[in-house]
Image (tube, rainbow, N blue to C red; front, top):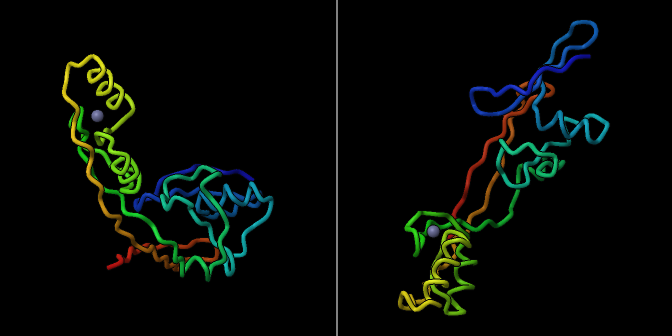
Length: 170
Ligand SMILES: [Zn+2]
């Protein structure tokens, strides 16, 4: 048996091509291939599906993959927090962060938000040297939540296309 790839399909998904000794070729989803290698067995395509823990289909590192029962995968109900874009109070760079982290700092009356420790450090150093005035404490922002729904369509016995749709909470 020979394995070629991984190759990236047009939709961004990674696949490998498996060529059996008898010359038979089959296409296997790369994350599924990795997970099966790790488990030392094949997944049951009717019952099991590969779940990307962080929902990023391109992150095929083994630590990001887990088996999920197919029916459960279709009805994933995990509540996720929408990341919010902030502008760094020091360098002005735009960055994304969970509102909860910003809220915790806002409660403590900390200045910011800062995109990085470097920027936070530069601010406090300048403040210490009394080169700048203390900034206002950062503003708390409410979290927005959404649920991610999965749907899976079987294309062939060992190939599924997964869809994601995000449903926002009011
Ligand atoms: Zn910054």
